[in-house]
Image 1 (cartoon, rainbow, N blue to C red):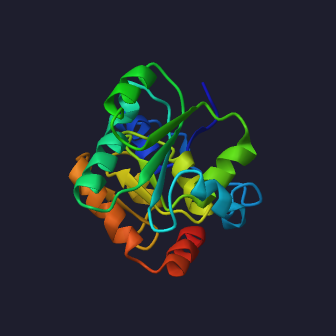
Image 2 (cartoon, helix red, strand yellow):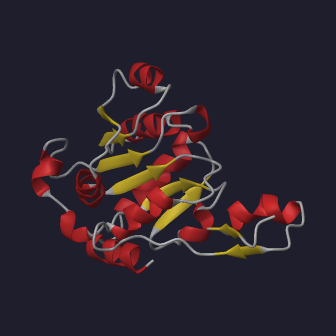
Length: 203
């Protein structure tokens, strides 16, 4: 009964293709580059969480079962076991918050809860070294695009839309295993930072 069914990614369109929806179009998502920009990077914000030589990781995610936020926490554990260290800042709230706090009790993880202030989120994304996107079935990838627009590469789950949005210069997609996520983070951090951030923004 609708004139058009619009999906942001091919991943999001698959279910409609499966039932042979004829009036389907794909409209690529975008981000307001005036709001999400590398210019919002803040060394003062970084120093609130890490020293100059430690990586700052961020996850902007609802804390619900389908988003698998525990994968980001377990990735931090792997990074510490591999000797890299790092601090994860979680922007998001949900029914798994208490469980995530317990899982991260012995790790450098900060939970901000829901961040309603768009500017605060933009500064956080731009100040991070890597963004983690652990959801295996994200049909939009909007948070990942906001990270890229902020000059921050994204490590995401290979399920869902992220393989369409990321390339090797601007991030990585891998399976849902903490060790694989950790190795992807390490690969991105080994790249020249200026080149990495330029590739993120270009993407």
